[in-house]
Amino acid sequence: MAAMNNGLTVVPLPLEMQRAIAAAETLDSFATIAQELVENALDAGASRIHLHWHPAAWHLEVTDNGEGIRWADLTQVALPYTSSKLPASGKLADITTLGFRGQSLHSLAQMAQLTICSRHREADSGWRVSYDAHGQVRSQRPLGMAVGTRVIAEHIFQNWPQRQQGANPNQVRQRLQQIALCFPQVAWYLLKDGKQWCHWPAVASLGDRLLQLIPQLHPQDLRQMSDAQIELVLAPPDCHHRPRPDGLGVAVNGRWVELHSDPSWQQVILEAFGRSLPRQRFPLCIAHLHLPPGAIDWSAEPQKRRIYLREPEQWQTLLVERIGQLLACPTTPLNDASGYQVLKAAEPPARYRTLLSPKGPTTSLPALKVVGQLHNTYIIAEHAEGIWLIEQHIAHERVLYEQIETDWQAVELEQPVLLESLTETQVQRFQDWGLGVAPFGVQLWAVRRVPALLRDRPDRVAALIELSQVTDLSAAKVAVACRSAIRNGTPLTLAEMQTLVDQWYRCRQPHTCPHGRPICLQLKESSLARFFRRHWVVGKSHGI
Image (cartoon, rainbow, N blue to C red; front, side, top):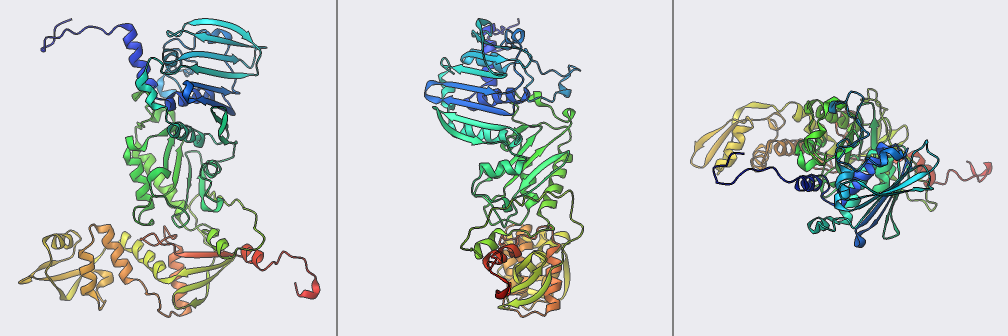
């Protein structure tokens, strides 16, 4: 080969070094090893997976009840670039399995002492096979066992001490939780040092799995939908939100995607929730997309943690639409948990599962009949399933904010509003937002165009000063909506309240105001019945 300009000669890497680099790219931590082994089990059709981890001994076992491996295949599975998962076409674009590279077991043989015990579903007994560092069979013997496979990796990373820093229990559990979310129908038994670490029985849906993983959640806190293209579960912002974005997740065809590697997906979710969460809080939202194999290029990265879609905007638009459907008012109460807390009965009620699964956007909404006003602040509405208390100011604020979001209008004033001592930044903000502003003297500015909602307000000066102090247009819209909304303490007629409730109930995101405050408290009829003991059988003489 020709010498390079720096005087160094280019030579091929030794074969052993090539294999070592490939192994290091594939298996960089205990979490990755666990992921590769359980993905093999899932590809084999397992409905139960047992993982046993001894961190101090650098020992990991994964046992499954899948279809097992034939004896002839056991002699080949740890060789480089061997796979049982190629599609009939032989094309990468047609792959539907989780694994396909044919490198994970070969890499593990280099990183650990590898033994595989397996019995194929058509065989009368199993085999125990041990492999050397090249993936060649070192020893083999028959073994009585149930149908399935057990992979034993001992002395992991013994010759790779830098990889032993990856023995992080939280990282391992998080990776397994992510996979378990993609496969709720699979039962998971995780042990660490011989003791139960995690146990997630098989469940019916993504939402049910999430309830297992986040014990503080209640079924009524979640909404979910599922169709041929997407499974989606989220918590409305008045039910649950989090201090970190650890409740955001996207999976594609059974594989979890690292959002930090493609932040556009996280941004899409956050924008879909919009101004519905308190400051510095994040939603709970998990989406599992089911895409045609040809829409994905999984060969672009060894660990399959990044997503490469041919038309990502199409699928992101779908995700936004589905989130919008779940955040819109359902045909059942938004959240009965708060009502239950108010009406705690002496006899604790059963936990009913109310995971909502709409098929599409709601077209007809149940009637909310306004029956009164409490303290000139709360609208009392009768619902088919109970009573709703709606805080009038923030309900109106939500209505106005969504109107402004749809149509941000600045209108001309007959007489300009004069403001004093605006900074250059404040003036620039007004100009960027379409509000006409010009010098009118020393440290005096004339504002000739204002948001439509502020045109007739007597406190326009204070409103514009407040507006000039926010940092972006979204915050400006929130400020205008908040200042223009009906104040608490304002008496309203039944007709006025009914109009407001009807408008609020049809908002895209009716759960919270743009600041993230909950708008509505629901008291369900079943909760009222429990509180007043209407299920007691006392007798006709007591008027029941």
